[in-house]
Amino acid sequence: MNDIWQALFSTEGILLGTLVPFLFVLTVVVFVHEMGHYLVGRACGIGVQAFSIGFGPELVGFNDRRGTRWKLCAIPLGGYVKFAGDMNVTSSPVGDDAGPALSEAERRVAFHTQPVWKRAATVFAGPLFNFLLTIAVFAVMFSIYGRYVAEPMVATVNAGSPAEEAGIMPGDRFVSVNGEKVETFADVQRLVSGRAGDALTFVMLREGREVSLTATPQPMEQEDALGNKIKVAVIGVVNNQEFGQPRLITYTPVEALSAAVTETGHIIERTGQFMKRFAFGREDKCQLGGPVKIAGMSAQAAKLGFDWLVQLVALLSVGIGILNLLPIPPLDGGHLLFYAMEVVLRRPVTERTMEAVYKVGMLVVLGFMGFVFWNDLFGC
Image 1 (tube, rainbow, N blue to C red):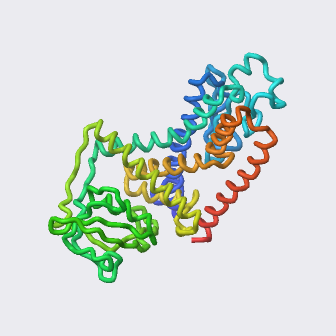
Image 2: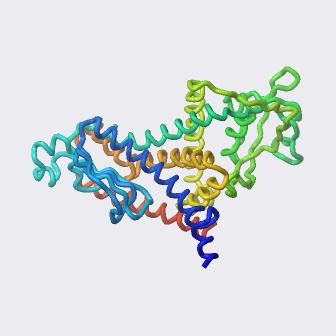
């Protein structure tokens, strides 16, 4: 009995050690995403019937004074906001069969009767709030802890590495990578780590003059701070205390916010780059994971401390924001695609077309979910 109790309720057990951190991370990200839809929708004068964290049977909930049902449901793998007039998942435009069933007062606040810009703003607000959450987390972290940086210097070059083959030498200083200026060694790592197999141009400062060299990063398996096996591209250079002269940068609140925006932009850029390379078969499928992998990362982050768990929230929030912007129904990006077509055509896309595309999109989404679940359980 004691063994069972330990396995379930100790900080190393399934409940407190894994399930609680996982639900914390996922709930915060989902809540912020749906709150973006809710707040912007309300600001646009759209009525809200329900705000749900999770799917399936309702566990607990209440109605606010505006008639919105706020609820927590049994399956915590997502959430939704149901707007007034939503008769189906496509949020049908004016003229659908459900339209006449609405009273005049209901039509004024129904989602599908709003101008296209209001519908687009409401839909886009979900991913936007995910990005804002990441910016907020990084801004607070930079304000409290600052950030350690090192000079973009080469201390040693690994034998047989792409850097050695390119002619990079100890004592060289990175000036730019593929035309992008670098100021820290972390900038070099950021620009190289997702470009395995790509020939990159490095401008190095050597004895007062600039030298242009070309090297092709190679993938190397490493273990990150959360215990994940990840593949990153490297050219085989090492920075150290003597050459890098690491120092702590402290930020004012305004500087921290600016740095947070920049860092979030870098994460979005790297994520987009990864997805593009993955689509062309240039990334390892095991780099993608689903709920099981996120749960494992949450458990490991919780062991390292609450600040690590919050950072995981920030990183996952960016990923959810980008994923939702893909132009695939039923994701937010799919709805935005329909609204863009509506603007171009100067009329709503027909209900039949929307439903047909939605079914295809749903199959794609379900296929992707099945793929990451397979990776989680069997594939990797």
